Image (cartoon, rainbow, N blue to C red; front, side):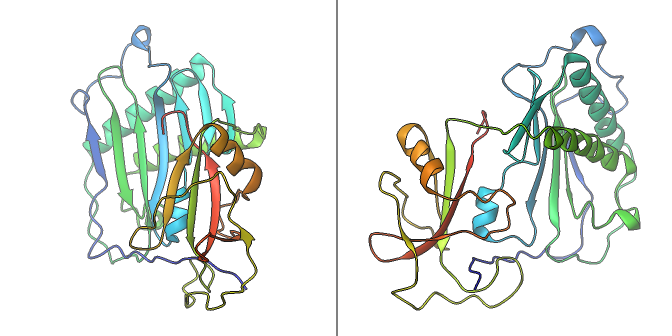
Length: 273
């Protein structure tokens, strides 16, 4: 029997236009000159995230950005794989994304469309010499056949998706000294399927003891516990807890010292988390 915690979120009302934010020059401004390309080495140059949607609370709390590319060339996909981009690749990515996001500001806003339940939100941001550019779009992929959003937003997403595929294909594991651990109450029902969720009624349900050396905070209103660990505690989590690499929510059960049964997993934290 699969267990998980389901939290459905509906996009209420009609979808509005993609939100584009900028601390940049006017939409018609030309790309920054080549010789001004000097991104901060230890900060994100470009980020691609998916948030919300039909996602269990525990998985949402653990979900990393799809891709983060740092100014020093380090590219990390799903907090799982990493590779490096050279300076020319960084410049091409940054200039292409900046052009896409500047162009999207001046294009027609989408016509309101019927509600799409549980559609995720796409977030893309890019560093530029004069300030960051970003856009947020609900249901970006789901609404593509209807041409609701400007094509340049899909261009931006596709640029990052291409880098994501390349980084993932290298199969170089991303490792870090810090981890995030998330635990949720053991519930019946596969996370994200819409099946009923019922608290596990069995006080003798099969579960491993919660590892000593890993301290979790008190649960929030939904029973979710989340903590970021470093040092010995992080190493203990990596060694003793099972990692949900494919983000499907099939997390093992553990029994806390108070008898509560939880399901838990972990992931490595990004340098800027």
